[in-house]
Amino acid sequence: MLNEIERLLRPNIKALEPYTCARDEYSGEAKAWLDANENSILNGLNRYPDPLQRQVKQHIGELRGVDPENIFLGVGSDECIDILYRTFCRPGIDNVVAIDPSYGMYSVCAAINDVEYRRVSLKEDFSLDTDALLAACDANTKVMWICSPNNPTGNAFSLAEIETLARSFDGILAVDEAYVDFSEKGSAIPMLERYPRLVVMQTFSKAWASAAIRLGIGYACRDIIDVFNKVKYPYNINILTQRQALAVLSDKERIARTARELVMLREDLAVRLKNVESVEEVYPSDANFILAKVKDADGIYRRLLDQGVVVRNRSRVHLCGSCLRLTVGAAAENDMLIAALEGRCIDAVAADGEMTSAGRVAAVHRVTGETDVLVSVGLDGSGKTEISTGLGFFDHMLDQIGRHGGVDLTVKVKGDLNVDEHHTIEDTALALGEALAKALHDKRGLERYGFCLPMDECRATVAIDFGGRPCLVWDVEPFVREKIGDMPTEMFRHFFKSLSDTAKCNLYIEAKGENEHHRIEGIFKAFARSLKSAVRRDPFNFSLPSTKGSL
Image 1 (cartoon, rainbow, N blue to C red):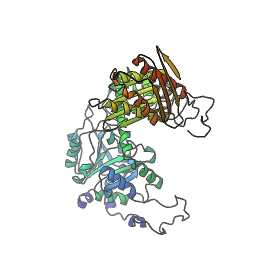
Image 2: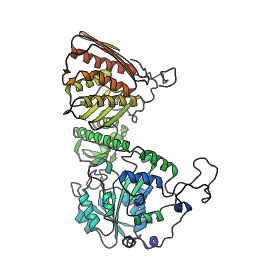
Image 3: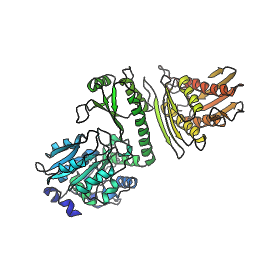
Image 4: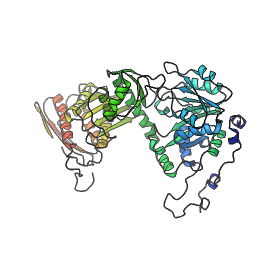
């Protein structure tokens, strides 16, 4: 295998005597580090980091099923891109081939390294033209760039097409999978054992929600990784980045959950975009962004900027005429985008769970073996709701919370209703309570308490306290009917108990009345009004509503 890689290497890289340090050769825990002329006064940052990032690679390898020796870490994927040029491409002689349109750094790095960059157009439907890609290659073509899912088109290519290129191309096939966690097409990583000239790149920046730490990943055969480690700078990944990477990798379920949540938000945004008059076409996406063709890309782009909504104008990119690239935001950000596209005046919206003059928002995606629940709340909204649980009466009750509580509320549930209603109702309550707790943020300026509501011949009283200690007192006349609509009456108490547990609030619910439909509807409306009162903020008092100093 080494001879096959050596054939492609730049002669100077093949002959390179790399800079080495003692820590390249020692992997244990030394009793005294006296090799690198560091300041030996300990402060937690006085030592150089592990030059080969062994711990981080071990955790990535466990997550992706890859031997750590087949992993390279760079300062963002951009270092992985650049090191391919510096390792394999002779300036002024060699060339690379890339799909067009695609990620702009491939061509920028080619220009920096004085390497010819050959663009091969995708087909009109953004599909891959493997024959044209192979036809563009010659004896000096060292690297072929395939971004899948592709940026800016958003579509992923089939693994069969990528394998065709890996089998047929005589150089390094670089497959950039920055967005792979949002796609159902799968990763090319399992092909590494069969194709030694394949390099797969991924990143911490997208699904792993860690763009700020600038950490990119390259997977390849041991011979390629060894050369990368010769060419890279000695301590290219700092200790703070390595620590944060380990923290991210310690919660693998959160990584997967975040990706699933964004996919649901993406699908929801795609549907909403299709109903916007100025949007002419919404292209399918396997990424965390959507490419949309609009009537006046430049004009709409400027209008969005005027409202503080920053998107990417791709209208001058090949095959993307009059297109904007729209990153999938949190639920409130997507609401803001749609409002701006529709020409409505909007306010700035804070990040998830933060408080500003515009709103406190949060989204929770809860996935179990029985249900898939997405809940988003905007505590300072106008009562807009979008509810779909599969249970008509339950939808009607949740709608009361939004409309009477002045809370923007989205609830989308896919549950095992073929088995029973229990899981759908319980998991919705748990997710809603968690979203409320997140949206309340640090609770400063909160009214905290909250209400009584008469409804026809019924009277429902709900008292609420967001004091941080969950408790439910349920003083409601027993229900005689087994169901109201399609919702079991035994689940009414259970819904509020589950909600109070995750919202970390005290709930006192009392209700009397003859008509059982009115009784439970009164409870939901009273809860909504109590919620509205409790989450209200005093704009002139940003203190914590507690003598203890914490909630």
